[in-house]
Amino acid sequence: MRPTRVLLAVCGAAGTLSVLAALISADRTAAQCALAASAALIGYVLFAGPAAPRVRPALAAGIALLAVPASVELWRDSTAPVRRQTLAPLYTPLDGSVASTGPARLPQSVLDQWRQSLDERQFACVGLLLGVVCLAVAVRALPAQQRPKATALAGAGAVLMMVFVGADAWSRVDDEPLLGLLGAGWPALLATLAAARMLALSGPRADRAALVPIGALLVAVSAAAAFQDLTGRWAAWWTFSHPDDNVVVSVGVAVSLANVVDGEAALLAAVALAGPALLAVGVLRAGRTAAAVPPAYPPGP
Image (tube, rainbow, N blue to C red):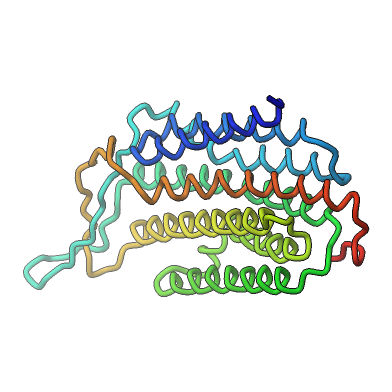
């Protein structure tokens, strides 16, 4: 059996284990398996057959950078042995029988810990942004062909992705400041825009099995989910750090969420792993096919 097929099999097996671990909320195992799948995929990219210039280095760098969120999650898990626990702060409206002495706030230690977690996720999204840019460089290095239907579908998907992200960001501006929201979610927002641009570029550069646009679409969905998660967490932090005058903030008991089936986390893990894998396989195949066929027109922006 060829080494590249072995590496692809290892990537698929590790990715499946990562998704199953995410399903049962085993974060540490999920992150470890995701890193193993990324390492096997990088090996496949490096040992695969000939490809267009800049394709393999850009693919390998992009996959490695996309593994930064899993690395951050693994590091956070090593510093906090008790995982899947959360505080449950609630707003309690004041009625006429309760005297208010001003807006109550969460303890500063809780807010600081919450903010530190946001900073870590923002750093992980910077790695996501750089990874998507590298993958877009690899896609753009492929020669473009005349594929009107694929180009139109990829462009429509990119536009819909940007509309969805813009609508999601606008829906959160009711109580939170827009500049603060964008300041917190800018790396994930730029990653989503870069992924949408990559999706648009993938249309005329698609392989026969359409793995390039499918992989680009999954990468864009993963980036959009990261933006939604980051801005949602920042909005919650802002809400509890700036309470209204007519409410009192009460903190609930920390509830353990260990060993709980989490279908959403498993789906997001599957999308995050399948996108780069399909994109890498499709880009390398498209590069080998295009090497024997001259492009209909040179690569453009």
